[in-house]
Length: 264
Length: 235
Image (cartoon, rainbow over all chains, first blue to last red):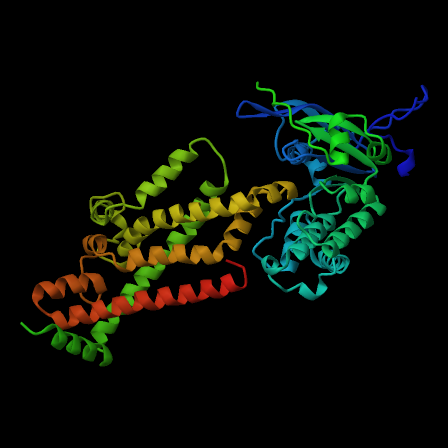
């Protein structure tokens, strides 16, 4: 299925008679200004169903803000976001989930954190319990089910946050640096969960600073610089022969100083 | 005049004797205060949570109002409740003046703003932590308030305790609306005021000791609960 879907960037000429495949999520002309500073500066982005898109770039490039805009957590100053060609309404929002860089743990047990999310999604009784058990098992948290979530290690908390997001059965999963400051074992556990979700058809949009992680997980890469898309395309191409100076410098580990942000 | 130690000794003896009159006063004090604090929590917790978690026009004004009402002068509240409940007042036909119910009403008016204002602060802080996750999960307003109140439950115990402290130590308002009638509306604080003026220092000091012990026990219980909750990372 994945091969049949459109790419972030057309790599070759398309057949003129091919029916356009609607994007799962599409942002056009996204602009975000806060305090007179332009933080997202006219981004067009297309997320196709079933793909794993890594959003990369230096600190302050706008990666996390872009994720929040696409997920509808913040409203753009200008531009629009479409879900399957329609509005990003409540139904669309409920088809998405997000895991934050610092996982938000409710002051409850592991199991109660999962139960809360599923209750919000309207799951009751045996169905909810079955979903909880499945999530605990996949995240290897069954033994910690009754433990308070906030005493878990960083890696366990992130696994719980990811399990909670996936238990809601999203079509699109946003991940904001989910493995930042985690050790290799925890990183591998998170990546396994992501890859497993992707195999089940969940579309993934993930912010990462980790080049190795991008190589392991990405189908597509969107490289941001100073609130703009410096480059986007299939991961293999962007990682092997970047076309933008910003992405090129990043991949080679060279210093590349930001241009001053536009003022409104 | 008796020495302080002699009066204190007599007071302790009075407490240990289990004097019926003394016990009646203590029981009424606790009944009125606990009832008032419970009603104040029923009103103040959701009210404070709503102001803390939701953004609406006039929210800043509501916050300023709640914070200001924390300092309501008890005698003014007593006077207003007295006027409302007196024979010529709008609630006069209910015949509540000089009853424990009138005292509960006065204490509830005093304690509700304290509970609501402190709850607002607690919930606002917690909501800041949860806000993005709740928006991502598309949590509705009722579920959001309920979840915030539940997760802040140990902090809110301290809020209720602050209300309890204000209510149990209150004298002006309950004196005005209760009338300090023996065996009917006489509570610890009004008795202390009365007995001191009469020179019956043993009873006044005995009640003072009981008041202090109650305050210490309630504080210790809540602190213990919070500490165990903190160890389990629920607070």
